[in-house]
Length: 305
Image (cartoon, rainbow, N blue to C red; front, side, top):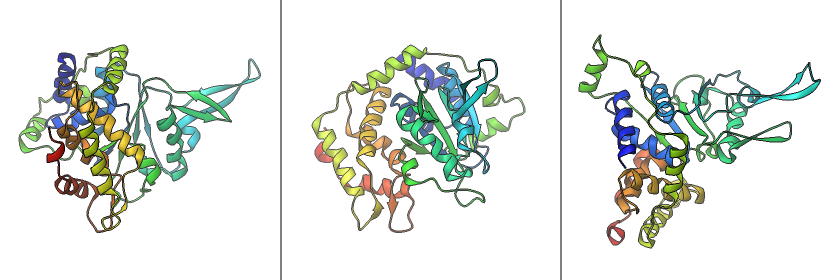
């Protein structure tokens, strides 16, 4: 997949030192999921969203979520056309191909819920009428750490709509030195060239669904799902929808690896990003740490071939 490798190379030139996160974000798009970025301000979340839109030449819009945001500010609404004396739709920011929902957890739960139908169904309902969103429709939402003031935790129902939750984190010292140089071209000013058409992206998304998945790999996925539902370890395990998402994104990861079939390692590579925001350990562990522990606890040897 030379074309996909070229896209990853260009994205890595914009987002320095975050090769794994870039690949996860691309896998999320190919798997028709949505991405949640949880990080401190200034880590490159917006740059990553703009770069992904740029390489596929997708329509991009950014919506800043604030405490006074209304659902209609997200979806749009019907307004009176004075010329025709009829109500016409004024589309909101959600009518785009890639939506950056910035600081999603600063908005009220009511405003947050405006995205639920859009993310799940690819449509929004306004005054009882459904309106289809552009295809593809990809949401990248950013979330501030919950210890910051003015944040509203996302409910489990909304968290489950996000295929992945990842963090970019601080750059390593070598990459940070490059960022600090006066002659460095920032990611937002870096010229991102379209490298794949919309039809090519749709073709790749369809190809993901055709990646071969053997029964032993499904056995391993089911073993992981069962382990998350142990009431002695978790208040909340992975739902069947999360299991379907795990299958889909493992298929996407196998395609990025240049194979036509899924292996156990593909599942392991994406499991933490998929499970971290969905798991609720009964102890004080983070979901990411608990997911990593599950990979060590659930044996992979019987299914590794």
